[in-house]
Length: 330
Image (cartoon, rainbow, N blue to C red; front, side, top):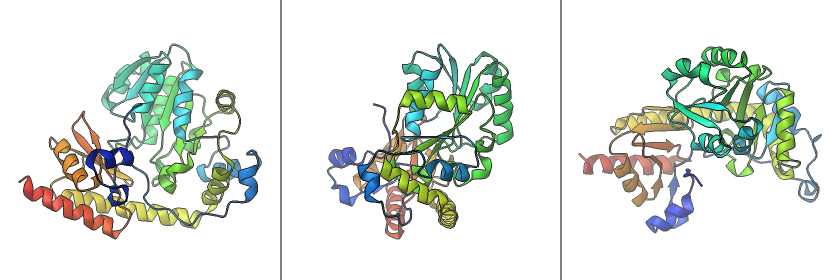
């Protein structure tokens, strides 16, 4: 299993700090959501059915004609490599490590690329995969650039796979509206923006033929009945979605300013997290963890990813810890 953020129980054991005493900033998941709907008993007692409104609500939310609900975008990440054979796959790196692991597991040939290296490598690729905005760097790709790359791949039957797990705060940058084009596959995560990672829900946006292949591969009932009820309601709540966007955008800016004020100006980021490249990353990670604040450490390059605190006590706790670290490491 690859290393991920959110492994709070492991950190609690390692640093001998009870779970309740931690401030978990190790993920890019919104730390707050909104009131959840009541779940009828039938959602628990009956198998999920496809005419319950989830697909319709999701199509409206993403502005698409075709999509497939899956058990988190992770399910799609692991399934997509099984729909091609012997592909040459370029992955814009660094990126969410599960993508490369999934393609490598199925025997495909991988090439890790910088953004600047894509144009030179594109003619040698069957699949180009990237995360937009990228995780962990926060780097954004313009729709125009992505569509240009897609056009070149599609001429040869290639795929452009775009993981848009963190794009909900800036939907104007999404390729969702173009996902009917052959060879364009867009992955969306529900849990990150809505603050409900435990619901395990994501969506694949693509042409109907590819979605049918994936549905057959994954099998029936991939999303639980209770998850479908909750998601249908939240996907229709436009007022709450707008409030969530505004709060996340404001808190994203606040986090960048807080880090910068303590000599940790972000190298990149988005509304849900910020990324700091520093030779002191490991030292800062250990210091914060010893004080019950969990971040996400990366070895190459030496860096930390900070998620958003959930409330004012969390913001104050992070600020005070950064102040102490700055003084002690000066």
